[in-house]
Amino acid sequence: MHTYFKLIFSYLIFFLIGCHNNSHIRTQRALNNNENVISASTVVNLGGDFDPYNILGYSELAGGRIETSYLKGTGGSEIGPYIGFGIAEDNFVGVLGFDFRKYTRYQNSPYDKKIGGQIEANFSEHGKVFHFRPSFSTITNKQKKMYWGVQGMIALGSSLLTEVWWYENDGSISSPFKEEDLLYLNDKTSEITYDYFSSGFGLSSGYEFNFAKFRFLKKKNISFQLQIDISLITNTYHTDFKYPENALIDPDVSKQSLVVDGLSYKTGLFPLFGLSFGTNFFKPYSSKKESLNPLPIPKRQEKKSQNKIFYDPETGEEINK
Image (cartoon, rainbow, N blue to C red; front, side, top):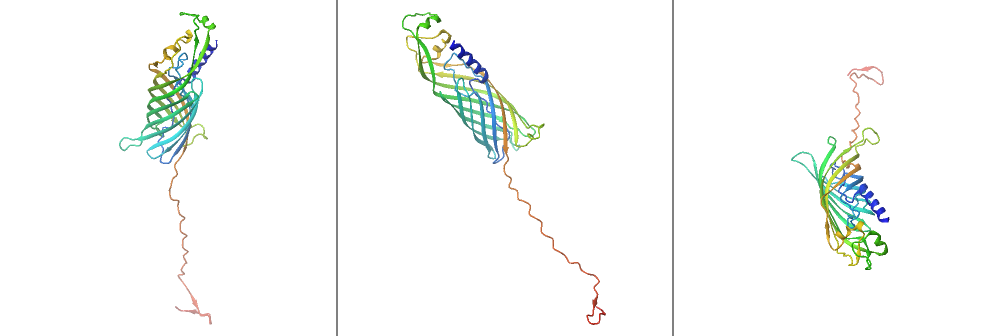
């Protein structure tokens, strides 16, 4: 009964967050030199081929996540770190990454494209996975609020930890066996390591806007984003672990023997859907314009008297000029 509850919980987690991440939402505006932007985003990913029967089906990537990023404009590009946390299949994952995107233009036109990507590390109790995501996207501005992009994905994990279990056959049960026969056997567990590699590509489309109805949100230094991502992902798992010769596997999880016996296991292409929402807070670059100097004080001009009359101080009579 415990196994079935675990499977139900795993399926619920799969439908809520998936087991991959290929969505990174950032402002699509071009930043001026020394202009800064702090962003907060929420990402939900669905899909990526998580099989709860397959104990090596754990990517240890935070599919659903919350991120905070900082970007600084350099005049023709943007750089900055980001941090976040999310949930993998059965545990919390910390995220630490770095963004870099260069602006491109066509001839003498304004910047209209961003090319670059992200590199990040996902940390969990089962190990760490490195995630590379090159991307190419259009730029938004006051007139152009829609954008689209193309991205790739490479994820690599080495010596990830997981636990396998089996029943130890004491010789009293022969194959084929029934599930109730396993009740009389001892169960064994072992912690094993495995390697993980994933690759894929996808498309994204979004909308970056300002709220016009709310005065306190209608500011040039705040923008909001909605983004949708659609990708195709393939996964490869490998382990050197082999079951003992007297091991019996529960029929409900017999697919374990296909991937945990010193073999590699590779999936086909599977879809991955992402939905993201983000908020961006811009700090404009400082302008170094010279302040206006005060105007000079006008000189006082004395009025000239046109008809001057002079008198003799002794007689008081008028003196002719």
